[in-house]
Image 1: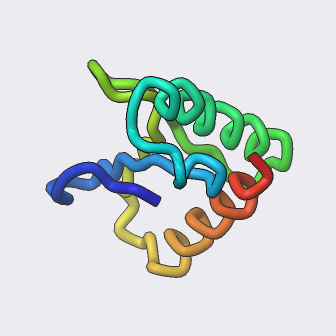
Image 2: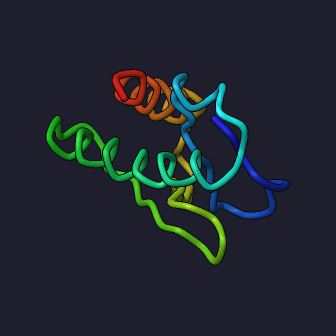
Amino acid sequence: MNVDGVPEHSNVCFWYLPKRLQSIHPGPERDRELHMVAPKIKTKMMEEGFTMIGYQPLEDKVNFFRCVFSNPATQREDVDFLIDEITRLGCEL
């Protein structure tokens, strides 16, 4: 996972960077590939029906996941589950 910035609010924005992209130097080639990662993972999430998380680009940033934690009952285990599932689905990319 890669978080760009300092946490400030209940919005958490991040990229899942598959292993195959980790060795590619940041730049246009990696950005083109990374731009498709979040949509592919979200599609798999919806097909499996376990959770749904949003994604979007912003200005010069490629698609990233955007998760809003607004439920005070959210526990660390809930976030761990989300991260584990993104990792599980993303490792196939």
